[in-house]
Length: 321
Image (cartoon, rainbow, N blue to C red; front, top):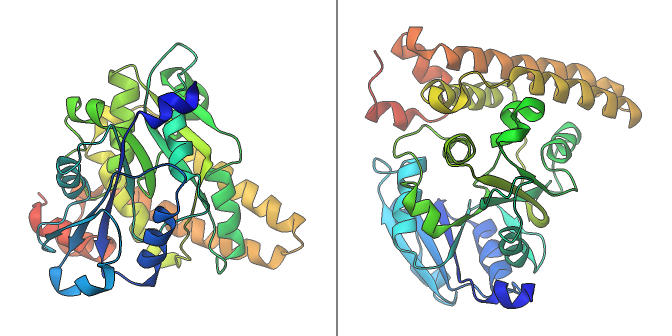
């Protein structure tokens, strides 16, 4: 009966793209191999000059729309992509995430058949992220920490135990009920990034909804960020939280980062790689400093903000006081 219900729900995949490469081609090929039918692959490409149309002519059901670098926005561009969809479920992916097997889409769709403990409906379901072959050892543990092997449905009742992790979700690969997405107004139109967690937070806190983590839905995706990149990424993360107190105010967050650092160090010791522990601690310091600066970005001069951010173009659109 579940399979019958699943097959009745249509799916579109929406992918913001910038400077497409061979990883995007692998992503397309893996989507073509999915066991669950995909109605359309909608690409929102930034900067038309980078898109070589002939390279992708053989990809079935591909629809490409172009935006300029000035127009791109993490929430707004995805909203535009959603506007081209007519499917029941939209799966947002990034151009560097590759399905790990043929069951990615089917596992995401099945997550919408679950509910929270109080009967809360699932409005979004995000995939498990597995490390790339070249992923650094400490980052491999971070993947398993943030994306464990067990699925979970999160609701407002989990805030006491999970804190900000209740809202954790990732548009690296995340499915949304399109009807509910449109009713909610989609993603916040202007955000430096973190549009996925802002949507999740609003859904959980104000709409009595649930966020599903589908561990059986797997993509290969990881980054080996250095200390400066981690500082900048966490700066932008904190900016997004500071700009949306209606979602994040009063929610425990720092303790989760401390737990990750402790667990990573313990894991590295068990792997008999204790010499990697100082690097984890130093990098965690950069993360925390970036987070603190981002939380206080309104007190910083513009030149510092532009040197701290990973998304300089955002600040060209939005003045800082």
